[in-house]
Image (cartoon, rainbow, N blue to C red; front, side, top):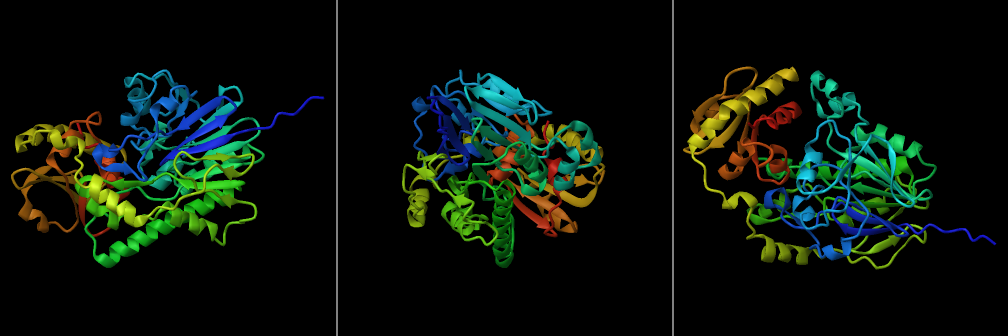
Length: 455
């Protein structure tokens, strides 16, 4: 008599957005971030990461969702076996592909929504969060009409991992309003979803890096936390999984930016899990929440973990930050302090790129960007077609609308020198930039154009 073989797909939680998927002898690792100090030295794993690299020598593949350092961790990949193939979405731009190849890995670009085999029964499907539809990205991010010609402009991806019977969905950092169409497409590709992974927290510089009154800070924290929790509910109710697990975004700030922890819009994973477990919008008989310790295994067939979850001790966490992270140094702190002249050489080319992108998007604003420079000077960057200007700090109050950016001059020089040294977006996410804006209104296109202010 023929005995039918049972699926044994298992998921091991590693850290942040990293999980190890195993089916029989086939393995796929997602977004490995195990080495602390990403985002130029400010992001640290908590609980502290205890992953042993030698145990990952022979995995069959790595999926990297996008270029942000907590997903594409250069410091981590440098320690990993270069013979492991890395799977990414076939993006319009080659930034991620080129960066991975520079580390010595073989990159396999996967066409949008194409299901490929990793090994034996283990398969992977990768989709851009905007479904390769720039009009969706334009609607969500507020980019200009010129972006329609560039293919997918979003950087993040979702993926589905299956063994022909069981299916795991990983939504990574994808915002639900942008990714709803894509998520629906994934759901329609499978009869049933067994396990769902989704982010539950924000990773932006707002509100902790902005000058805000205490009541506005508190309201912003609550609004952002609820926004991400609601997105989690939306993903659960769309995919209708047997099991779901909030993950990713489990980090603390190190170095002098540690003092911003209390201002971040965040909650503990434990609190997020409690929220979903008690949500009135979720059918808890059909969809069960999962929360895992680092290195613990969840079996999709039995629906059980090999360990009992240990909640985070918040006092122990604060003590760890004080004892181990507060005095940590950032990547750029060993650089020589630049002079005003170092910036004056770069500014014309940087402004040319900024203004070219502004014109391409047909964007104009009366808001002035001011960047602090050495010798008590500021760089004025108009976003309405006027010329840039070096002014004295004391003259800023002459302007009605402005965005002031303050950062370490060593990091600023890296950013303006080009993306291979540092990038505005990563500096912002890493909480290395301080912002003062008048009025306190977010202009998405302004920040988008700022990303191009480099040579």
